[in-house]
Length: 299
Image (cartoon, rainbow, N blue to C red; front, side, top):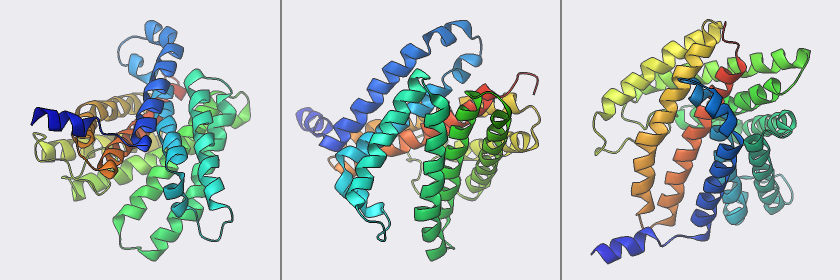
């Protein structure tokens, strides 16, 4: 029996292996790049300085998914676009390049700016049409808001790496986009408390996780309070720091066990889903922490 379980756990597809490998590699690169900042920081600022790490790892994971599963990913490319397979590969390489840039803090203003624009284009070309097709379905709306929060986080990273007037404008736009997402997700948690916390998509928190409804409601309350603070630009850094830290804890102690459980599933789709949920929520944490990092301590 134990042999069967181990065989199932290690029976990975190329896509799963590439996604995990990319994530682990970028984790090591980003951790090395942030080592001095981590050493200097104190308290929760040690979490804040991991904003680039939290943002870069998911991009590497998604980039690897695009490259290893391009023929599946191309089905999401709008049918009116030519060379759909090319765009799947192009986005994969773009995501990997952006992840390495953000992890090493090299030319972040350009990589993050362009990634944010790419997210905006995804929303306009892929996700908004799905919303219009099924306006009563909450999931397409969540995805639109989620993608725009990712764009907002990227533009904050870009703005924080810039100098001059454009810096504050990008950070302000990013702050508003993140605030909208945080408030929207907070409401969704109260409407659907059994869903996995953080980014409220369709997956339910497994019954074997204790206090799942309490975690859902608590996360919703944290999101609403933090979202209001961020939107009104009052104690923004504190609100973003606490919220980002909470989301990181959810990634580690909710999505981590879910990922481990799904990696033992014989289905490749289940493994990929577990990785995607883990990476999605980590990217949301990175977006929130990027706001904390870019906000002065006095704000």
